[in-house]
Amino acid sequence: MSSYRLYLLICGLGSFAGTTAFTLNLIYQATVVGLSPLQLVLVGTVMETVAFLAQVPTGVIADLYSRRLSVIIGYLLMGAGLLVWGLFPSFGAILVANVVWTIGAVCVDGAEEAWAADEIDPASVTRAFVRGGQLGQAGSLLGIVAATLLAFAGLAVPIVAGGVLTLLLGVLLVVFMKEDGWSPTETRGSWRSMGRQVAAGGRAVRRSTLLAGIVAGTFFAGLSSEGFDRLSQPFLLPFIGTAVSDQLVFGGLAMIAALGSIGLTGLLGRHLHAGHPRRIGELMTAVQAATAVGMIGFGLAGQWWLAVGLYLVVRLLRDTATPIMTVWLVSATLSDSRATVFSIQAQADALGQIVGGPPAGVVGQRRSIGAGISMAGLFLLPAVALFALAARHSARQPAS
Image (cartoon, rainbow, N blue to C red; front, side, top):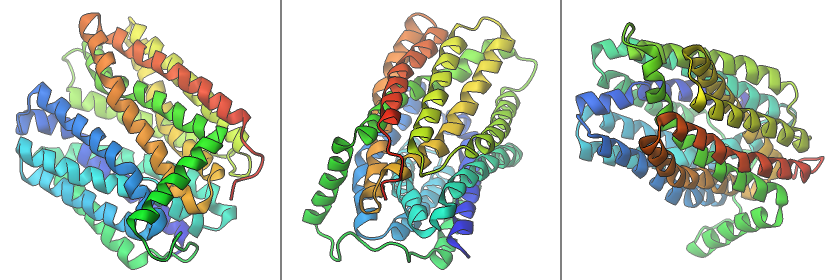
């Protein structure tokens, strides 16, 4: 199997398995496991904290040893974590499963994109990221349907099914994944070499206004995302009423957002090329600016049609921003530190989510849920300015 086709398979199957497992996960935790609101929050906090702590070390390992090995271990750990999550319905087991799954996720994060950038033909790599984003969105769409249907047999069934599929993907990668276009930064790893790799990634970010702007902007985007993720569905509940099942309503909205993201990603993909990072940065700036306006308006919406419409717009734009950011980072990084820089950027996002969730929650509790969401939209405005600054400093040719 060619690296191009394998990357598309990873995007589609990985997204399908993950969405199948997580679509009704919060309902499973609240009803089957019986977690309290505080415990639900603690599960999310543990996830983001582990992601923050593990991002850079896993990225360094991918740059020093093997991107292939990092990706394979990541999917195997995620599959094992999901199996524990679904088979052992207790708070302690979910915390352990959460740690295992998150370490696996950060092993994949950055290493997967760095592997693809080195193994796929340069003329096809931008198309691969765009197509991969579309297949990921299509996989999410099918995963929503699968989770809804499997849940009739029990809310733990979609989680276990997602875990089995993720493990199978890891096994497939053992067989089909190759690593011919890249060699380790050093022939022998050590703590000292890992420290040098972290320093190299840090220097790459500090010395580049482009990368520094991306990382700083990602932090503010993370500040914004947590408030929207936690408060958007409670905000919509009064608009929906009780005539229809909440699960069906939010599943339907997620499907509409996924379909829209597939179309929008394909449209924007025609204007993406790793050789023109400035154009990519300008596109990212526009997407984030529209997202900020959508969040602020969503929090202020007083009519159901406006609230639902803006909710879909924000969901669609956030899904579309992911492949754009991937292409932008690939265009701005060198191969020997690419996975580390990806991990630094992901760490900034995790830190932003850790810091940004509580303030939006406090505002939502003391004033209104809509005010908390609008505050999350305000958090995104500095990201727009930083991405615009990074776009102006983008080179005309990819760094590699």
